[in-house]
Image 1 (cartoon, helix red, strand yellow):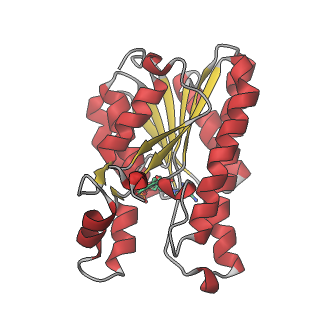
Image 2 (cartoon, protein in one colour):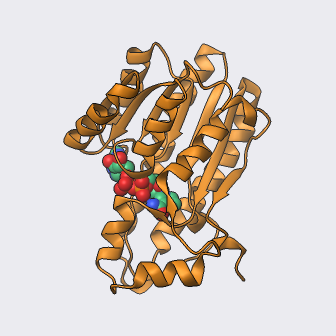
Length: 254
Ligand SMILES: NC(=O)c1ccc[n+]([C@@H]2O[C@H](COP(=O)([O-])OP(=O)(O)OC[C@H]3O[C@@H](n4cnc5c(N)ncnc54)[C@H](O)[C@@H]3O)[C@@H](O)[C@H]2O)c1
């Protein structure tokens, strides 16, 4: 991918799943990486695993907390001498019928997936505007931001919110040379989805793959990492204020 070598990349939620695969991909492209994550032990383990590939370090913290976000972004700037690309990836999900969602559960999903995304994006955008050399911000949405999957009302609302946050940021930040886009993956094999499907019937994943995904399989984290890499690269220099769907054709079904 053109233009990624030497880029300084901050990845929130980079300690697991899609974020960890994305850290690996950027390191393979010759970028430098600081990754965040909720659990210190998981951050340290992922950094240790990826270290042979290049310059990578990690910082644990909760994206819901302003102080933690300030530590993450200031720490990344200090570690790399600045940030050029934000992969705003941290998020959480669980299944829950709409009629049973408690206000606390609603608040938790919105706080991690929408407030957290806003806090990290704003902190990095302020850095990029102050530096005046442009940059890239990529926000993680989902196919669930484009369609209303049952039992995910809070998650769907948070990911739909990410799409309009992304478009508004693109409108306001374009004049600073900051490109802003979103990713909308479909069903991807990650620890998050393993935890969700562990509570469901044994054949849930295979029947979901058969009935909902025209390519007949779930996606891999590496296939989403490739989308992040493309959108961050110079090959996407005129891609701005939109979303890239990576779903094996799931949204094409009527
Ligand atoms: N797996 C999928 O099918 C899928 C599909 C579409 C979108 N997504 C989105 O992709 C992103 C990554 O998901 P994944 O499947 O790789 O999950 P994962 O559970 O493997 O990784 C989630 C990452 O986010 C971090 N995180 C969670 N809560 C946090 C918090 N409060 N503060 C800081 N970091 C926190 C975790 O530490 C971890 O690094 C999420 O935003 C998710 O909504 C996933």
